[in-house]
Length: 92
Image (cartoon, rainbow, N blue to C red; front, side, top):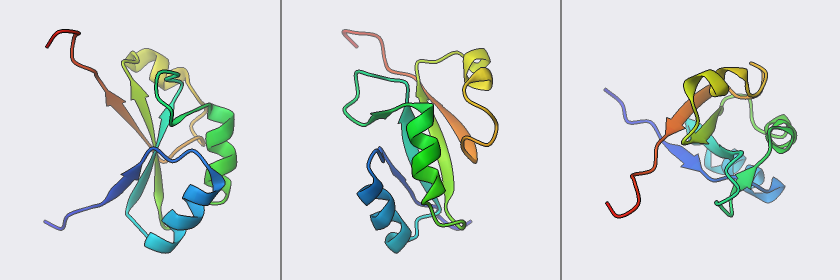
């Protein structure tokens, strides 16, 4: 099995420039999670992925989001993959 690399937390056009040079397998976008300084909206992800090299798979990272809501947000062309991230309960 070959290891795959994902760079995550992209939020600026310059991040896409760096990712296009580094050529990871995947790149991640933290979607609709305002507590993160790397939070992006679906519209921002669309604009950023338009600049992304076609051989890098974009991943929408959804924090504490229901699978049903992930399926509705955003349209299927938004990212190549979706990832659910769950935070541990406070005090853990």
